[in-house]
Image (cartoon, rainbow, N blue to C red; front, side):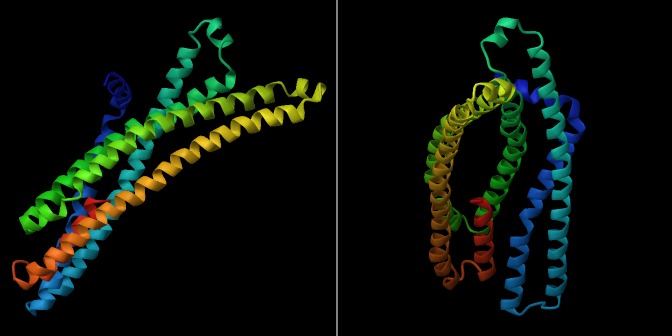
Length: 287
């Protein structure tokens, strides 16, 4: 928790830009909830044959929502990227200042490549996890809350059926997070060792050529590079299992909705447009 607060403190000088970023993110999220409802209205109006002249205006409104949503998303990306780069700059500067205050013994026990990796790779990692994470958490909570409310408003029984895969999704996410944390730590350590090996080889290139050690150094670097590749492959393999599995569990919710929802249409408890909107909101929920 202390680490999170420490990282978030870097956002204080950029409160205005952060506010704009979160504001645009919230507006974009809210606009994402409108199209499925508009599609519901269009389908129900077409099927019932009522006020068909309004459909053209509804379609124009739908196009307007899509345009505004993407325009606000453009603004969000621009503000977010600016904040990210400013924070990364501040972090790197502070790390470099801290390095200059350390004793000589500290540098004697560590390679230059490892220190360079810490300044570059680790700072970028912290920025992605904590800075991007704030925006993603806010939009995710808002999206899930909004969709859940709408689903229960449309039909509470159907909403309960749609949410049946949620416990399995949460269980899978917990397992993935735990394993991925350890694997990503290994990736960062492997990257640091590879960069250290590369920097040491470049700085000592004259000695390498003088003693004809090129093949030996190539072999040493390739060993570290292979370790880095293998650690990345482990992360990708875990994601290759997790992502399809979660998508399959999410599709189970859609299948259950189609099965149960079709019966509700025949019983005239919901309209076709409501079922289509339900599926649309469910797609947003599980992505």
